[in-house]
Image (cartoon, rainbow, N blue to C red; front, side, top):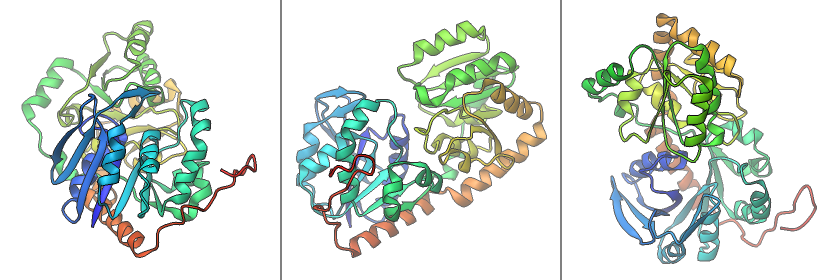
Length: 383
């Protein structure tokens, strides 16, 4: 079986889709022929291997609204002899590449999240998205909660298969104790950790505001367009001595190990799952997350592996984090339960087998009829 995955950026960079492909592609490559097609951060195309999976990083001509446009992707897709194409959305460029390639084989779509930020562009692109989803043979969602609450997936529930993201829990067991000791020595006291791109929906500004009422150090690991705004927020809140943004870090494990509590303060449904929760849980850390109508609160369970609070409420974040910081026994109990939950429910092998079974099921069926049209429920127009 040969499968072509069309993603967005290099799987070795930050991002939910990228982290997912970094785990899934090598696992799949043990059983099938896997090829990744993603955008390069340069104009030239480059090819390499990632633990058994081949990667073509197509040269990026330009970016618009955070979307890379890579004409080389179209030719690569046309020339690829894939039995099945697997798109990872949201990514308008990937959809355009797929449609322009005229591929007529089976299509699987991983629907990572709805698009919210660029509402005008999203409405303009919706007809093309609908046509692609109508054409596909299966849609993968990371949680049933997202299927139930996504306006887009509501139209295609019969095609949706829930496959939660997974990680290799054992891969987080190996850590240099000297690195952990150095982090604790540099930052001292109690440590709260947050990881993610510095973008609006991560809710880091609310976590920074919460630190006004938390006697601990907050470390934020990540890069993104809101760096300046968050640094200004830190200064305005008077927590310069408590909050540090460290930028991109290659090895996250020592930071997970050094932390006392992990926080995921996301505020919108763009945060569909939160893979970083799994990574912290694999390191035996309790999680404070938010009650979004997505998979986020179903990953770390409130009262079992951590605490869940309403989004965009600094006071609630502070109360939950303080409760964990002040109760070592509770932290330990939640942390142990978190590790067990990752091993039992979110392992990479389970995710891989579920994905392979979906491929087998799809390849047994005739491809979806690409000429079938979708009618807009709101406007009654044929798309």
